[in-house]
Length: 196
Image 1 (cartoon, rainbow, N blue to C red):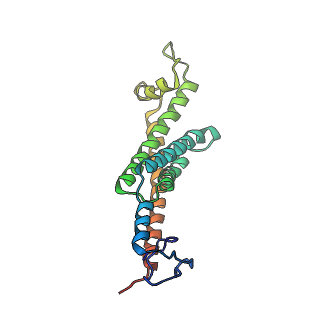
Image 2: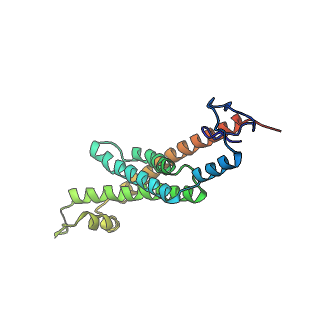
Image 3: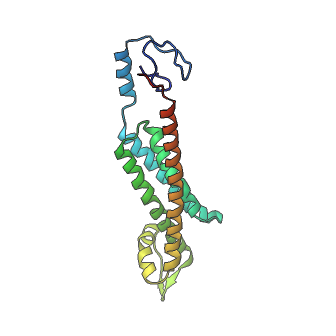
């Protein structure tokens, strides 16, 4: 039998969960297991939306940090946390596909945020290039960044060092989050009762 409150296995004849101490519902086991399966069924669209929301929030934080005089790489720590937590908040059970989607957002978000930072810098600091006025919208400037690197408007070394720092901090955040989840899962497995 599985406790509906803490989702741990307990002896079949229990009336109170030995882990959380809450009383167990008095219903047929088959009915309860069917409800549990429906409740814990993965909801991929909700997980995707949660991961997308986490990516958008963390991307916005990365873009806003230079405005506050801070290094944008610090926002990289938040990327993995917010993407995975956003997905888990809206979708209790994460599937392998959900993990893949979260990893994809975790890899894309720092790049897009870094491009946005560079586009904002170009819009603010480069009014003309070799006599040509640089009157571009944000989206035009965003897609102009690779050309700006080729034309040495944006320093290549600074660009790639900033991107590398951002990915390193994102990796630190990802390892910290996934390591914490792994330890919590391992601890929960150790606490499960073993019935012969």
